[in-house]
Length: 229
Image: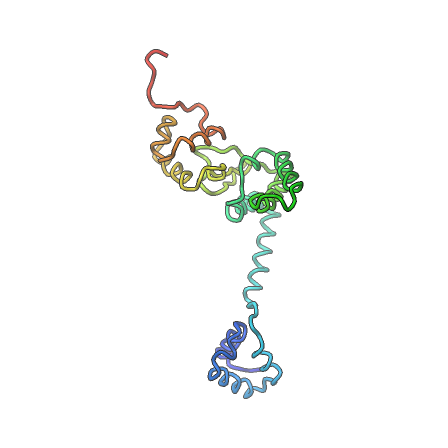
């Protein structure tokens, strides 16, 4: 209707946040300005009734972002899955269930389906992640084994052969412990399990978990050499 851009924007923001009648003096100014530019009364009355409106710019940004994500899912699938698992599924990713092939994933999904509403809240939130992991397997991609030196502490890494899960995706191995290992390994290889424990400041429960996932194969317990063995 030809209102100057600055007050037009301020009116829009006031209306969409439901503040039209919360500052009567300011709103009277805006109404006068709108009437000056022949804005119809029905429009002004509508502005006074609106409680909240989603901003158009945000709506456009969401749609643009959806197209970007879809493009990556089709054209750069490994990058898509690695980003999703690192950012959106960090709390619900369980390497024990998800990193050993699609049959294990399918079995867990069946188990949750059979429990229905009786499924644990953790399993319910895990279900969409299991669906995406299954989709990834069906598209011919795989997870690489957890590795003491190659696995990141918290991020899934894209490699030529597949996606390598982070250390903190091992159930029971927290982010603080994973970051401690990542920091310690920058100083050089671990001489033994005890060396790993001391330098990374982790307990035996963490090294036991790493053993379970094959991360400590070939590593001796201590630095000491036997003179008799």
